Amino acid sequence: MKRLAALACLALAACAPTPSDFLSATRADTSHRMLRLPFEHSWRTDDEIPPGKYRSIVIAPVTLAYLDSSHWKTSRSEFIPDKATWESETMALANRWNSYLKEQFSSPVCSLYLSDDRSDPKAVIIETAIIRNTFARPFSPASVSFEARFKDAATGRILGTAADTRRKNYSPDDFNRSAFANPNDDICEAWAIELMEATNRELFPVVWRR
Image 1 (cartoon, rainbow, N blue to C red):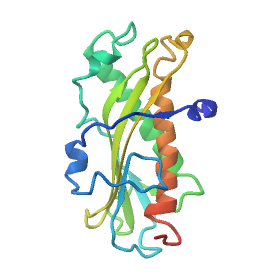
Image 2 (tube, helix red, strand yellow):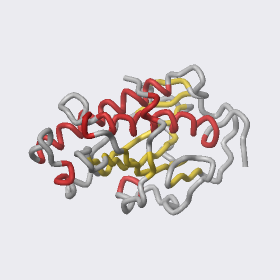
Image 3 (tube, rainbow, N blue to C red):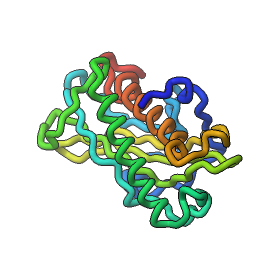
């Protein structure tokens, strides 16, 4: 599913939620932002990573273990009548985002090879979590918040982190059963592209940049 025109219309949210335990457990500076990256938070270890140290990346399943469900009613509509439906649709969104991540990290322009081998000492594991999710309603935008952490597969050491919140509006005319989750999908699809590009440019570049 490609909606390139829609991706160009994504908007940053005004503020981000408090970091969840998923991110705060890394002890990374969650107030830090690398200005060249499009995320509200981004951090990379100060240790220089020699080119060639990592050759593959493992995409862990997107987790909802840190999802804040206290705001689910902001998604209530004819398509989200109750919390159970919101949870089910959010899980479906997480599964689609996992597919988008695998698609982007398998691109030939990615500097790392996509792998499932967590035992590879030259692998990086990217773990992602959706921590807040709101489906759009007429005159009310969709909103998604994510956190990510990059880990050394051999040692478990945190190499980098990222977090972002985005909102997206769409026309009330498009509010139907088959399309109501499209804005959330567009946000996640854009993040998949940007996280792959971030690994190339900042986290694990072929040429190290300061």
